[in-house]
Length: 167
Ligand SMILES: Cc1cc2nc3c(=O)[nH]c(=O)nc-3n(C[C@H](O)[C@H](O)[C@H](O)COP(=O)(O)O)c2cc1C
Image (cartoon, rainbow, N blue to C red; front, side):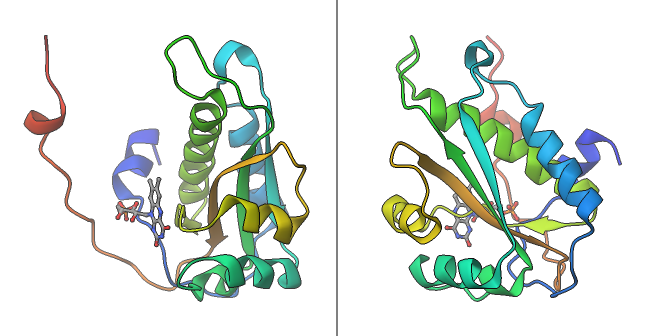
């Protein structure tokens, strides 16, 4: 699968099988995160791979609307920044760096046959408390990770003419 094939075929998965994830696949996904670029190569970030059932249940409880797929999937990925600073362009470096790392990890997961669903419907403080994360951490994104138990249709996207402009 090429990078573009992964980009084109990836879907958000909201129904998972309980099939365990092979450790070498988790390692590869972690590598995709670790090797992704950061501003000034700062790497002030961390990926938490949550496998423990009790912790996944804690996360499910604080997710808004309590989505069942959080505990259906055998693993949750929690993408965090460790330092909050603002770049020259005014954007927060942790939000940008961690989002890039999460996107790389999600695409690598898809290449390996694993589904994810980027989630932002949580209060940051609740996830930090659930996992006892450091005070200064920012929880930029969380996602279940597991084998899909559904094959969703592609969701519509705006046309290239609407989202791309050549100047
Ligand atoms: C920043 C961001 C936040 C999202 N938050 C949620 C969420 O809280 N719950 C959820 O079910 N999906 C969430 N999604 C998934 C989007 O709904 C999904 O990516 C979008 O509908 C396009 O579908 P696709 O990923 O299958 O292409 C989020 C996606 C992004 C990029």
